[in-house]
Image (cartoon, rainbow, N blue to C red):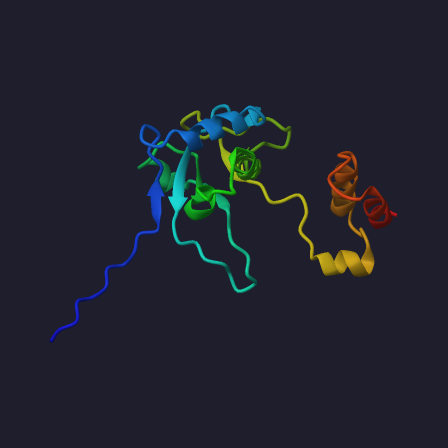
Length: 176
C-alpha cells in the first residue's frame, strides 16, 4: 500500500476586499494618522496557523515592503499580514484591531533624501521603506539599569503623559 503524500498547507491568503471588507475599513481608519502614506498602495493578507516562537511569543501582524520585482506583479507597496486566528478571536475587538493596524502602519514610511524630501523612483512613484520600532530592550535590563537609553526615556515620558495606563509612581521611578 502506497502512502499518499500530505499536501503542503498554504498559510497565506490575500484578503479580498469585496468578500471581507472589515479589515480594509480598519486600515482606512488607521491611515488617517499616517498622512505620509497617502500615495502608498497597501494590501492585506491573512497568515493562518501562526504558532508561537521558541520564547512563546505569537506574531499578531507584520508589515512587509513589496520588492521592486514583486511590484511588477502586484500593485502594492506594502502588504500587512494579519494573524487570522487572533484577528478573528472573540476577545480581539475593534480597538485591538485598530491598534494593531496602526502599529503595522508605523513600520511603513516614505524614504527621504538628505534634505528630508520624499525620494521618487524612475517611474515617478514614491520610494518607501520599513521603519524599525522606536525601542528595543529587555525588561530585565530596565529592571537592573533603569532607563539608560534616550529612546527608553522618551518612551517612559510618553507613557507618563497618559494617566490611568499604569501606576505613575512606578513610571516616575523608572525615569529617575
